[in-house]
Length: 452
Image (cartoon, rainbow, N blue to C red; front, side):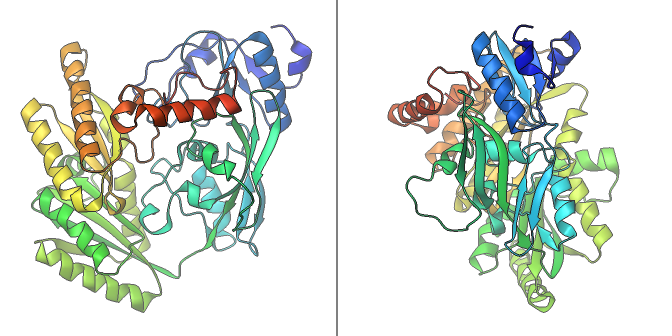
């Protein structure tokens, strides 16, 4: 490796084993083997790796924990270096009086949650992979999670971002104040940009006081349509749940097969609802939800203690790992977002597509904000069926757009949804995005081959 002085003290590898490990993520995306992998520990080291890489003509692929579902951290083409931020795991500051925290991008979401608990604070965005995913990766995809229905997504909590551009220049956008009107809010462009505009090296987040109490409800239904129709009725009643999750019957059967948690399996759908706040108030809300669900023939159970609640969340977060354990099938996963008044229609349509194609489709997700994770299970080593699976993806995306939805709710576009982006966006919209990309990264070094 040339220019070694520029890389002094930085861990970098061109060993085959390392390169292979950083050539894929949690998605089905197929990329290429990078030439190098680097593990900087701070902003200054990122700058040096970026300057070294661009001097060598290497394309740069920023990476968090590799839990992405759209191939955003997968190298594409030749002459690439993966810059893994997983060693940048320091919580730099927690300010309980200003309700902010500043972290390096490699901090694990779940670990931050634990540190904040000491101060009786919490960070609302909570992806199902929170025990593994990084805050930097969450910012790169604008991740949400079950609590998004009440508290919003990553964008709603990012106050400031320090970013290393492809020139090696370090720029900070935003600060620790909650309100700003000082020109264009460039920070908002970086959130959800999937590493195509720069490398996020420092993040300041808003955090909240922990709620006083939490109640968890499990509601089962004999039809998916009824479960879908219940969701807007709950929200329309004036209740904003902390979470409002949906699991279909296939999810429940998979979880029970792998973990035996005692979930009901003789039902078509389940809603997992959580309420937080003052205990008397949320008990009243819970009673109201029971009545609403009953109108749609939903049966409700209440998780009365911490262990019961955690068991339910263990079940919810285990779905993706369970899908990977199916020996004879592989998943093509997408995450769609639809208006909640069309949620029931969408769930019914997914079932119809599954029956018409004779390919299993497993659905679950954040019903409260219309974000459903759809998993098309195709037979392994069956190229004809895999081709049909991708035709189903296109069919679902076209349906979603016609009802006013989006082809991605929180996983991003990356590689896997890039072929379908023109279903959602017009040519002018894409050209404007490409123009913004050129301003930040005129020579195209940053995460090429992603989004458009």
